Amino acid sequence: MEFPTKTVHLPHLAGGIDFDVVAGDLVIGPAIEQGSWADHEVALMRAHLEPGARVVDLGANVGWFAVHAVLAGAEVDAFEPVPALADIARRNVERAMARPGAGRGRVHAVAGGAERGQAQIALAGDNHGDNRVLDGDEHPGGADDAVPDDMTDSSELVTIEIAPVDEFVEGPVRFLKVDTQGSEWLALQGARKLLAASPQLAMLLELWPYALRETTADGLLAFLFEQGFSVGKATEAPFPMSKERILRQVMARDPVHGGIDLYAVRGRPFHVLGLGRRLHGMARSLREP
Image (cartoon, rainbow, N blue to C red; front, side, top):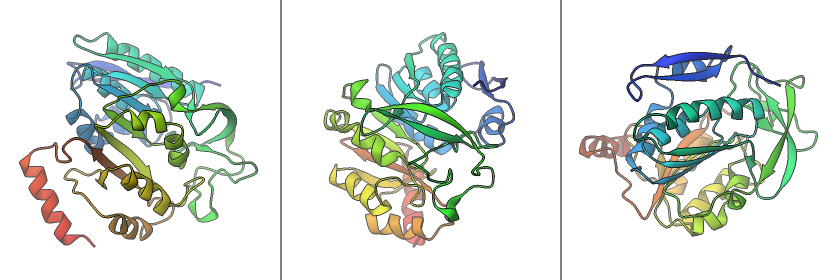
């Protein structure tokens, strides 16, 4: 299958660059067209990068994070299991590599998992960033109370390849992004060698308890803390949080829209966005539950 695409011009990025998005997508595409998709997360990633830094992007979609990392001079391995989306990401990454001072990028049409295999992924109708890997006869949305409006039993299914990241990339890496709509735990289990070889590592990770596969929110957070990460929310002014505090906040959210994007760091400074953002984060830490 192929997705119809729309090419948007982003004059503020790298002095002006064309970027392909999925035509008809109602979430990521319009945001990118306005140049403002995942601003806080992108800022945190770029603050950890310098030319030659190595980045792994799991759940690359159309390549927004991968392109930003390449433009920062990084060496990027991006993983996007939906072949049609991987093709779009590859085009965007190739455009970024043509810019002066850019790094290099490779796009793998594979999902990061604990072991090799195949699976079916259900494609969401209006939000092409919310595609879900299925387990057996599972409903495309996972838990009944976590089914988005545009994902039903009749959602289009695509067969994808799954493989451990450790088969593709050897550490150390500087930055790891994991946004796989519930498969984050499995992706990390297939990247244990990479994690062990990357003592100085920053990470973005989606925590969505109701869509998580093969673990719980508590189990995923425990793993991060056992690995030596300081963890907080990926906001404009992040601050380190305890496991209990993160769980309290994420479990109080709406099941469908209630995930939290986490920011985790070990071996490097947690605060990388300047003194003003650090003070803002400290103030927020006093107000939030």
